Length: 325
Ligand code: UD1
Image 1 (cartoon, rainbow, N blue to C red):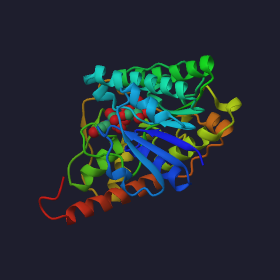
Image 2 (cartoon, rainbow, N blue to C red):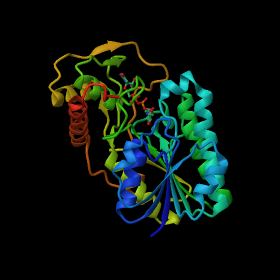
Image 3 (cartoon, rainbow, N blue to C red):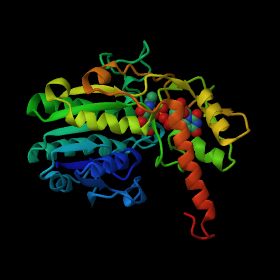
C-alpha cells in the first residue's frame, strides 16, 4: 500500500482523512504543529500511522516528511476570516509560505500528487449563484487571498513541473472534531457548543446570509477520489466540494435550536468585516470528473454533529472537578 502524508492531520478534516487512509491499509504520516490541531483527534486511530510534529514553515522538516510519499493531502492551514484580518502576516506565512514549502518538498522528493484544501472564500461575493470553477475568483479577505494563492501555486507546479495537483474548494465544512471553543470557531461548532451550555449565540448581520454547509464525510470522499482520479482528468484543476444547497444562518440556527431543545430566539449583532453574503456551489465538475456525490446532506450532517457534541458535553460534565480543560 502507498505511503501518504496528511498535513494538518490533527485538525478536524485532516484527522478524518488520516483515519480513513489508515483504516484502508495505507501508511500515513500525520503532520501537525499542534497549534490548533489536537492530539486527541489522532489518539484513537488504528493502523500504520506515524505522527510528525512539524511546522509548515520548516522547509527542512517537510523535505524529510515527503521522502517516499505517493500522495499528499494538504489540509494544514491557519483558518478563519476574522483572525486573518487581525493578523494577516502570521497567516500569510503559514498559508502561503507553508504551501510553497510543501510543493517544493514534493517536487524535490518525487511525490506523485498533491491534493489541496482550497476555500470557497476564493469566490468572494461573485455572482451569479451557484458559483462555478470557471468564474473569475474575487477573494476579499486576506484568508481568501492566501488560500487562493495556494491554488495558483498548485496549478503552476502542474504546468511547469508536472507535479499532479488537485485543489478542492471546500464550502463551510462541519462535523465531529471541529473545535467549538474559540470566538472564531466555525459557526456550526460554535453555536452548538453555546446552545449546549445554555449561552446565547449572536448572529452577525440579519441572518439572511447563506452558506453551502458541507458535512465532513463528503469531504473525505472527495479527497480520496481526488487522490486516485486519472491525471488527464483532474491534474492542475480546481473542484468545488459542497452539497450544492445553500442554507441561511437563520434557518441553521432554528434547526440547531430544535435539535438541541434550545428555546431562545437568535440575537443579532453588527455584520462581520470581510463576511460575504452568499456562498453556494455548483458541484457538477466534481460529480462528472471526480465521481463525487455527497452522501450526507445538511440535516443528517447536523444531526450527527449535534449527537457528537452532545456526547462530548456529557463526558465533560461527568469528569471530576479540576479535570476539565
Ligand atoms: C470562511 C470560508 C470557508 C472557510 C472558513 C475558514 C466563505 C464563504 N467561507 O467561512 O470556506 O473554510 O472561512 O474559517 O468565505 N457567524 C455568526 N456568528 C458567529 C460566528 C459566525 O453569525 O458567532 C456567521 C458569520 O458572520 C458568517 C457565517 O456565520 O456569515 C459563517 O461563518 P464561519 O463559520 O466563520 O465561516 P465563513 O467565514 O463563512
